[in-house]
Length: 360
Image 1 (cartoon, rainbow, N blue to C red):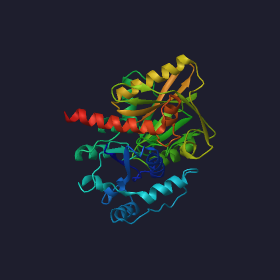
Image 2 (cartoon, rainbow, N blue to C red):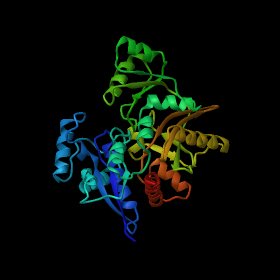
Image 3 (cartoon, one colour):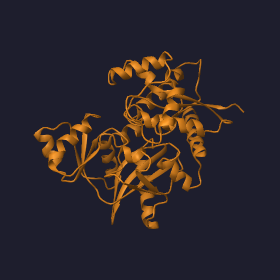
Image 4 (tube, rainbow, N blue to C red):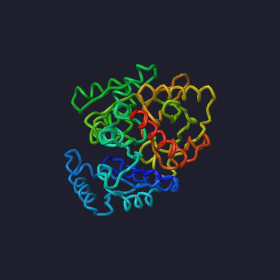
């Protein structure tokens, strides 16, 4: 049997490039080599003329296209993932290869997070060139990535969402709107992931700097009520027949589940299955499936929730959840008896199945 040639899209130009590289390295090491041939593709190669990225990133893209080898980073890597990030960096090839017949790819496994990976843009490109890919399509990706729009859709579907407003600066009008939410408040970019640019504001004097931080990563900042309670997350997998995986509770040593809490070893504990009453777990799983369907997700998603007494608040939906072996979705899958390699194979099979269906 011919092996399936899988292009793992990893790296990219978002603030979450390092985590994407760690994900790509673990995926490549976990796919069954008897069934899959894997190549790590960096979509930064598509972006050599993109004015929205930095000049340094455009230079890196040119080096990648010309076969310049490993791309350097100028910042500290997440603790515990340095080796995997270095390994993936050395193995990268330009994703422009998927556009040629000289080196064809059967299916793309998207291991990108944040802007240009999780927001529908790379999905639209792959649709245009006719390459099947894992996970949600353009619509669901764009909707879920825009936290303002996603909240409106989830609320319309009957889910409880945090009160909040969107601001674009720190004018008096912006700050008055932000203050209307009340303190403490949670401030984050509208379209970003991994809690990059997010912060908790406890005092009014901290509000302008929190908004400015969020606006470094997006043109809009979302100011929300800080919902207190136990933090839960529920992954959902499948195409037509959906499975809500076991609920996870997140216990972090930090003020909230920020970038360091997510990726630095020892900063958080994730309890799976969560130590919560069965009816609460069922309620969380039902909400995750409803959110998945409301946003028209495909293949996988993960709903983050805050639970306190009778209130269970939907915080946001991730269409490309973390996918290292110890990330939340794979951890929940393992609790359900699905190994990491098997989980990845299912995502690929669902992508190919969906492509065949659409080609009929």
